[in-house]
Length: 336
Length: 210
Image (cartoon, rainbow over all chains, first blue to last red; front, side, top):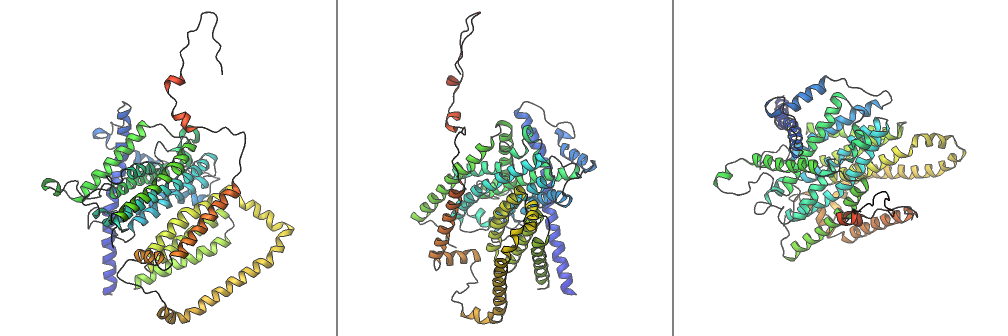
């Protein structure tokens, strides 16, 4: 009986921690959509959403409310189970990856040994939400969009994986907190700057952001894999997509920008808690994402594939060899 | 330990049921999805016995890459239709003996594995590999792969490379008469050589060479 109560206690504690992480993530996803639209508008000399609430801050909440009250239409020829499962898969995968993101040395839900592999595995599962949605819709545009998207995500995952190997060579551990701590003296963005640039571009492709948003290229494919979705199911796809973008920004800041470390360890800066620094870094990367969306035209599909396989893959592989040889020659390889 | 066994039995039940559903379900795309579920629950089992590296690699390689290709092929080829033709055709019955032989071999292998379970304590003590509890299993896999088994490891890598090149050579065909885009020319195109200003004489026009 005592055992049972202990179990329940642990379970409630974990649920409390999870809610304390997920609710802010979901709220910030809504805010980030607003920020994205605002930046996009400012670059194009428009106003953007500025009516609902102060500066239009509540626009996303209004949108979410609208989606909730819209009818969910399931096409009669769709494969119903998979059709409904697809947005759920996307949303779940986008949220479970936050479990391993460290917000400070202790503020992390699961401090596992293979944290970076977990993130990589979950992001490689993300393609299933899209394929399932595209196939189950039983319609031309979603299917084409899903196939494009799957090929694109699989291609760019390869280069992201190799970039992660670059960072891991300098760290010697797969734990995310160890990766952050290894950057105490020097953020990896400085020695591995080319890798940071490639990571950023691959992250754009991995999250289907412009200029690589071919899966939902509206001029060719209506809305890609989301064409048949409506109401809350569409909103879940949309939330999952933005949660994934935030996650990629978080991954980028952990791998290259020192995670929750403050840039300079002197008095006024060291007072600011780690998670604020992490949020600042995520926001910085997200603003870059939004700017790219506003200023770069969309790629052609063959250009996208060429960029992934013929440029990024050889470049990052060469860089692995370079990093490894440098570390080996100067005897800097991390010891466990 | 209670929670541990609950999770273990849940994951193994899911793994077994989804493995059965892979063979039973009529829709081939559904079978692939059940296969993916099977992979995921097996990797959860790996993680539960402490082999977290293997579990994650299983997820990344099998679920993230191999099963995506499976899904592609199954979705594009419309296998369901072909299967019905295949079963109704005359030639299908001559493959039954080969299938029977292979399944008997696998059956006996399974019996040997299950029978060998009895000798597991002897196996563990007679193993030449010692497990160091202090280092994480990622490190210990790395130590073993790059010291004792380096040649086997490199050889399997070479095999995969040969298989990859072979697949490319077998499926590659040179097509003639296809217009290819030269990225270099497209990107290096400047305004000076792309646009030309021409004074057009009145009532005469110009002849533009195309």
